[in-house]
Image 1 (cartoon, one colour):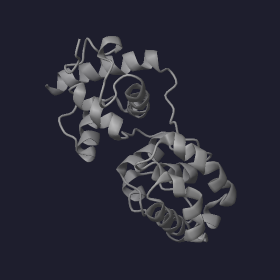
Image 2 (tube, rainbow, N blue to C red):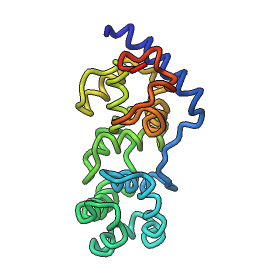
Image 3 (cartoon, helix red, strand yellow):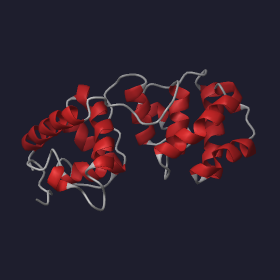
Length: 212
């Protein structure tokens, strides 16, 4: 599909998903940029619902950057154990907090390039923070975004970084962040990985992968 047609398809998808999901918000519950960073790190191979069950006690025990930076990794492990990969995640969270305190003066960076220098922070997490906290154009290439963008013909790769790059070329910058949030909601409700509900999909007339 040529870029012009991809832009047209993207515009139709944006409008259809806006109608179905007018409130495009992150499903992770957080109070500030640090909490979003930590919640997103916890969400790797774990549901947002599970993360939201774990973080209230975690953030009560460690309410700010300094407390996380000085935290005992073992204590963090116990609080996040049910999120899976808890040893690696706990280590990354404490190391991230120390780096933010010692190298960034306690300020969460506002660019993807700086954020991915933090332990455990990849482009998906960085884009989420840049978009949701700082209001900059962002493309969060998570599993829903990658799957659905390919089904719609907007992308032709499963590589997350390339998906991000390809979507940045065709999505209006002011729509990109909300579009990715809506793809998550859409992926959970209709366009699932194993059994997409093409018969009730609001995009079935423009989706080349629709089975109707």
